[in-house]
Length: 154
Image (cartoon, rainbow, N blue to C red; front, top):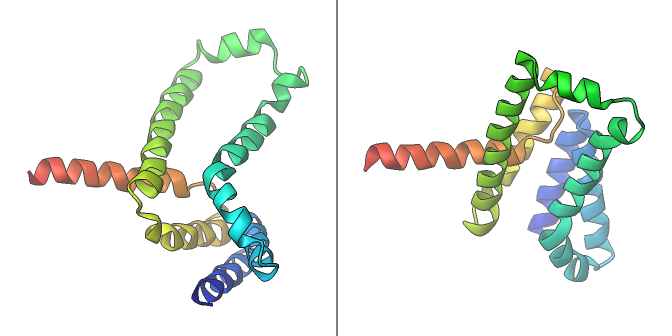
């Protein structure tokens, strides 16, 4: 019952904050719990959901290439510009952070911080025009900060 109340709070915050993706995901989980399907589906989602979500996200990003709207020449040109090189470097860093974040949340087992990450994403979506895809990078920043803090403190 406690988990349902927490999900309802997250749903309320995401609806009020207009973070539709968070609201839809929360509704999906609440429906699974209501149907008592959570015992079967939650383990699968926990194991494979991130991968499946990333596949869909990356596929949607690659559509302009698949549609032919992005040509080989424009790709070559972007890698010879300062903006393209900067984008490559930032992508390397954020992908590294996402990996740290996934490790921090799953392997190291710090999933208790997820409500704070979700609330931050909802607030950023509501007031800063953000898109709530940042919890993994945020947790990566936390993991990196803790890693650096532990090295400095040692």
